[in-house]
Amino acid sequence: MGKTLDIEKNKINKDKFDYEGDNHLMSSLESSLLDNAFDLSDDEKIAIIQEYFKNIMLTLGLDLNDDSLKGTPHRVAKMYVKEAFIGLKPQEKPKISLFDNKYQYGKMLVEKNISFHSCCEHHFLPIYGKVHIAYISSGKVIGLSKMHRIVNYYSRRPQVQERLTVQVFNELKNVLNTEDVAIFMDAFHLCVSSRGIKDITSSTVTIESGGVFKEDNKWAEFISIINESK
Image 1 (tube, rainbow, N blue to C red):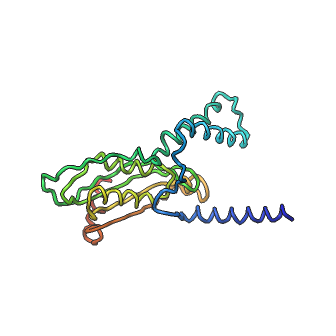
Image 2: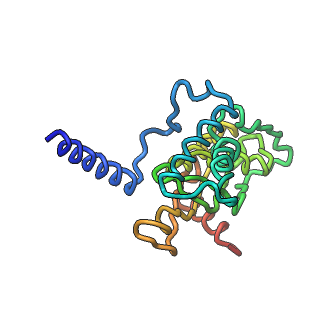
Image 3: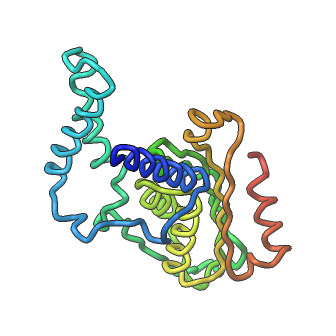
């Protein structure tokens, strides 16, 4: 009887997780971290993840004595800590320098086709695509590469695209001290193309806008610019 109840409980939990994953629910605007998230050093995290991933591979029936596979647990662990999820570390947040808008440039500035790679937090599969950013100076301007660094920082963590869009949007508003910011993000999700529905042609678009970009004519101008010679 107890075993039957456990099976039913696991089925309910599986259905719940499948629903949440397929519907892109997210718990909060901030990435969810434990209070002790930074107690371990990078080397300690790599050692622990390496053992866990080794067990995953063994459970799948892979022979870790094979020359091609035996280094994989360490490679994956190092990639997680040092590359793929480096955006979880507050110390990796880019330092932003602003400059006076000495040219008195008052139109929108658009940075198109910022490439990014992220990771779906529901299936730990890649998300990749392009971000287009526009802002109107409130007296300061930001170095062009800094917009790329902001996108990279927030994307290098387990994510959902909706949260990533809002995080980049809010960071730019805060840094530039203006509401006049617009974001257009277009991305492919391997959790859609390589599993589940297996649709390799669709992409996901998320947008966010503030200030003058909430006006139809200004938003239309932004969209027209990013569509030019795409």
